Amino acid sequence: MTALDRQNDCGLRFTSSKEKPLAWLAGTTLTLGQFRADVGRLTAQLQHDGDTLISCPGRYAFSVGLLASWLCGKTVILPPNHFDKTLRDIRNQFSIAFECDVDWSRQLPGNDADAAHGSWEPLMSRELPAVKLFTSGSSGTPKVVIKSIANLLDEARAIAAGFNWPDGPVVAGVPPQHLYGLTFSVLLPWVLGKAWVDDLPHYPHDVLQTLQQSSGKILISVPAQYQAMLEDGTDLRGILCVSAAAPLPVNLARQWQQQNDADILEIYGSTETGVIGHRRQLSTEAWQAFPQVGLATEQGLLKVDSPFVSDEFTGGFLTADRVTSPERGRFQLLGRADAIVKIAGKRVSLTTIENSLLSCPGVAQAAVIAVPAKGLIRDLAIWAAVVADLGHPLTARQLQSDLRGKLDGIEIPRRILMVDRLPCTATGKLPGKAVENLFAEHDRTRVQL
Image (cartoon, one colour):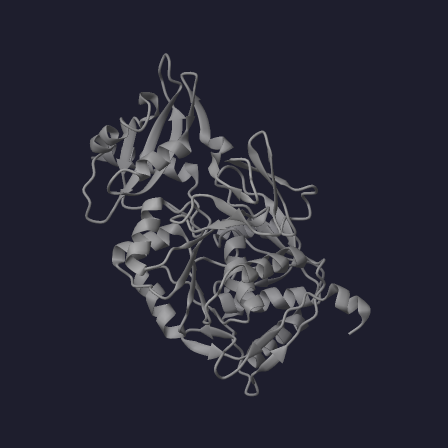
């Protein structure tokens, strides 16, 4: 290895043995030799200029496409979803040299008789523009964010060093094409030297089966999936559970601790910044920043500067999150700046209303929006969509009554719609437009009746 190689080397080391496989796919173990052979075949095909688009499901094929592209000095485009229109738009927008699509992924793993165990330390440049990610678009149009290998792997190493990770494979209920899934279900296992599981289980029974089949000890998921498992009575005692991408309701956190004798580890961050902080909210409401993360405030908004922030944001990234002044890396989130609206001249926090709803008995989830209103005084009205705890009867009138002791009259939702579930994305985000659509669909159904 030359001096330049050592300077640019990302320091990854892959290993596998009979006792510790590299990965799990469809209930079977995979060796390092198999992975290395699959990566090698793809690198031989990546000879043209342009990016690699990974549009296939499954964490194993994703990992093969990701590592092969990086070894060839190529940037990987990770689509926000796998809808046909989204993929067509990406193909038109970017110069794609190779696409790791569904048909390509069906060839994996290859049939390699000599796919033995061992170790491998691939060389890659830390400065390589590694991925082009898309923000969730939950508060506007999705934007492209570029992260370097240094951004990504320094972040994964900080997460690895920050907690006592149990010895066992990593299972994830979130896809790997968003930063949360990429970091925690792919790169973190790479850095920790733990097996990653190909499956993307959605339902409680599938999550439990995948954990049992692979002897998994770590679950990467989102609040909506934890809520479903809680209602199903899924026993996840002994599993380290991580949550991100959306706020974890305090009632869910409390009930989870009672059922599974452990707190859920919450992670706070964004596509632009990477991870920012962590907490176990039953111990403290405050978030603790990772040691590598520098925090400041500008007009009450959180500004983040760290090795994980995309290089395109020189001097740090100003978030849209309102926070208390950070002290020794500790802070509390007060809601997003775009979650403050004015109704009849009064500043109203949608986050406060959501939290008040979540504190009402029987409320499992809540989403609050402000919609145009026809009135002489009020130009906006508060609407809320609510999911009740399983088996707990709730009515809109009852909730409005419960809120009278917690909120001013103008803050109490004028409409409360009881729904079976909230329309969260695969990563747990809840776009405001999707909540509006719940009301529109409800009103259309009433008209048809």
